[in-house]
Length: 206
Image (cartoon, rainbow, N blue to C red; front, top):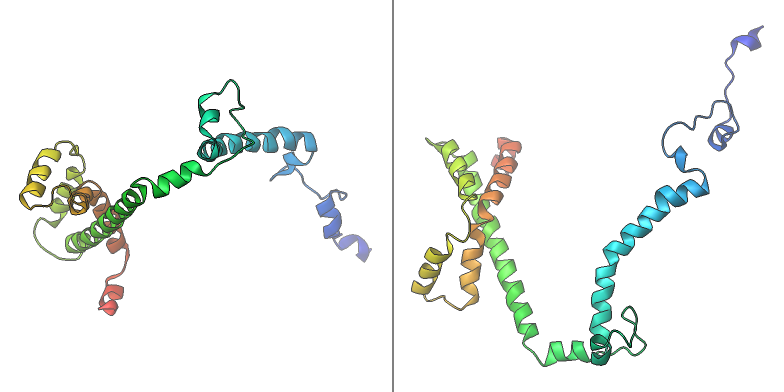
């Protein structure tokens, strides 16, 4: 009699393997249990996505190591494979052109412009959020509206300013002018950061 009142506990192994009546396959990823369903609903879409995403990188790498005659004559040679790879193009790019200098200038401008944008945005966001003065809310809105100004409108005045300071045709011209467009967006991001952080944490950091 007492045995009938004790609830029967199923073995976890039988529940996991599905041999127990308590096993429930109606939730989770149970619809992928059979191999044909996995092939159609999982492996086939993943294979298509991988091919579409990785094919441009494969094509760029293949074009870089193909000889000139295979690049120009696609009817005679296989366009998707090469049996005689060469590093002539890479050697010419690195040692016979100004590509390393161009790459250095690009990285220098990108890093310096990013650092300048972050520093200016953090200082501006701190002044808008933490400093109490009349019209602080309107200043933040005005900075956001400045983001809506097309960059092409600022090209002529910025070019004249850069020319007057003698920075024309130098990397500093790009470093000083590139942060003007992403600066309002970084201000808004920094505003949210300073609004979420408690004032006590900022006081302890001083």
